[in-house]
Amino acid sequence: MNTTNQLKKSSGISRRHFLASSGLATAAMCFAPRRLFAEYVSPVLIIREAAATAQITVTKLRGNVSVLEGSGGNIAVLTGRDGKLLVEAGITGTRKRITEALASLSPEPVKHLINTHWHFDHTDGNEWLHSEGAEITAHENTRKHLMVDTRVEGWKFTFPASPVGALPTKLFKTDYKLDINGTTLALKYYPPAHTDSDISVEFTDADILHVADTCWNGYYPFIDYSTGGSIDGSIRAAEANVARVTSKTIIIPGHGPIANKQQLIEFRDMLMGVRDKVADLKKQGRSLDEVVEAKPTADYDAKWGGFVIDGGTFASLVYQGV
Ligand SMILES: [Zn+2]
Image (cartoon, rainbow, N blue to C red; front, top):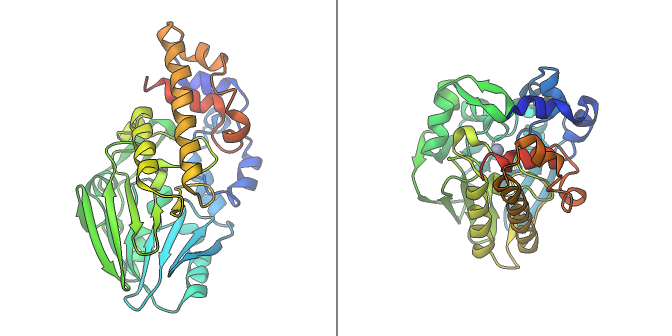
């Protein structure tokens, strides 16, 4: 199989389209835009460029929890007298507008930062947030990947080791509880799913759950096989999310608009449906190219394929894991 040729073959999103849409939706990083590969332009560089002009929207959710959308993965913000707590660090190029958005919520500084996993679009801002006083909490595998040069084949990019100031220093393995600003946060590790470093962050009093990149609301997700992700792990995480929430829970997905339980169910069902179709074709002995040609995602593309990962790219990600 030749993934790169497969990627080059069909027309991917254009650079212009990507730049235009990346400010709106935040599925900016975790994707494999095929035409970009053909031109040897790293998606990481494109994201950084787009982040320089990205607009940030601020939405109050419940209690003292808000969400900032527009710079990498969705950023949850908890305000209060202990200082702000952020879940996700955004992209450094958007620092000025993130700072303005945070100031619009309340005056206190950012004291705490949680990374839901190691990917660049969730950790890029670690260094500047830490320099302003934020202590960084994450799963131990997030630190492990950030500490060394890390290759992501799906992006055709090797991330250099992060500077010391960007590394999480409060680490955990399975569960971690924090009491801040009069409320409790429950951090929980997912067994390997999108990567091997994914965690959820629950604001227990407000009944809000940040599910990291285990849900892309309305988009096909990236799956990072290079650092422990898989389609089956992604499905297990999606099932765990559905089992865990009620119809009242507010869900912050890694990418895409704020979600509810029904949308978690639809995301899980899409993952399972595509997996079944791709696995059937692969079992028949079909090559990657033949599986993509057979359009196993056809029933789903109108709803899920409208942004950075189209059906063919997602089918090839699933193919790797079945
Ligand atoms: Zn990610």
